[in-house]
Length: 239
Image (cartoon, rainbow, N blue to C red; front, top):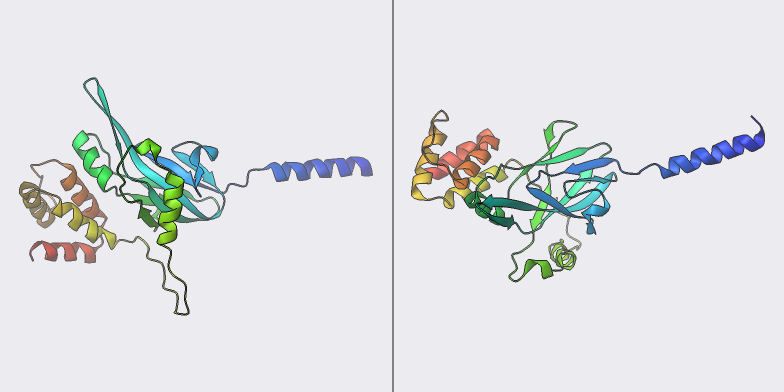
């Protein structure tokens, strides 16, 4: 190959390498969620509403519960407030949001007010710790809201103030949150559900006679809790 041809081939190869996509990781949500923004850019610029490709490194991803349920001839929409996630991606990470299955209007209404989920890395099969903030509830017609501005102000307000004191480690979501969530859903339950929950906690072979989102979410978080959190919850129940 002549010098001229080698230069042309080398230039063409360089252009091809530069044209390769820089994305190195994937973030995916179930159909009951939507990805609103990635680093405050519309998610559709990165893919679709359910899966986006991002560069390796730190990213802010905003998601929300978004469920349509049909009853007779009517369709009802249920949405949570935007949930701001701060995530660190490594090359080839594939993070997937795992959320409870919502099939009734009662479940959707309760879940939209207090959405909970876990995050898994499909590549390693392990659960991922994450930081999150939920935008405060705001009255009024939701389609008129400037979410980007709201998120910018909300996250800036919650940034730690830098001074000469030692910097504290960030608070991350770990298994300890299971105890708080069990208490949260137990407190939202009626007396019959609380009784069923106490029996089920004492005997995991017991089949509850009630079915509602409060019981399902209490069981969901109890099954996720470590031994320490389970014992703490059982002690809390008898206090």
